[in-house]
Length: 193
Image (cartoon, rainbow, N blue to C red; front, side, top):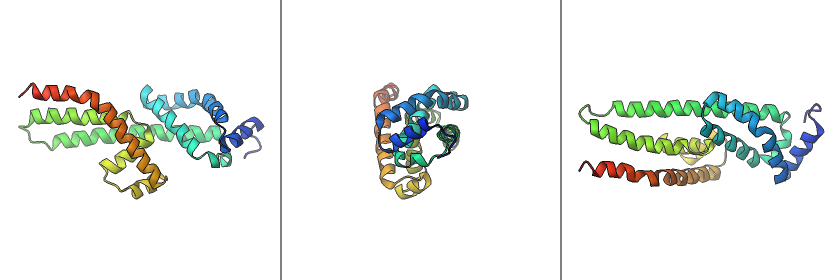
């Protein structure tokens, strides 16, 4: 730890490393608003900002045993916030480009099918966008990029079991989001028959 870091903050990090949830809540209260402000200036999305903030603190809790090795927790959190926000923006751009490329490959005479495909894709994209950032990343690397759990684990620098857990949570989240909305697509489809 840096000697310039206040003793109070150093003690807080030691308590968090020991699994003290009250200390962790104190850290969350101290940093949520400042890092959310940074994230929002990049994403311009309240929902994405909330998800990224949650994901950052989830990551921090999962590495809590090593938290005392972070010399500047303030700097660490702000760098992490900026990286996560920029990553979310890049992912959104990549996803939109994939949809555009997919729709461009459709036969010109299939306008109705294109519209249906676009609705289904956008519904799944909406569902994926609702997921916490780490779940989104794991799900996209596995389901969209076709990578194996081991490859995803290496790329994300997490364990295979964590990847599996993220993807299970992501699938549950996508189903939860799509299920109440899919009937609208089905109604639209059946109304044309």
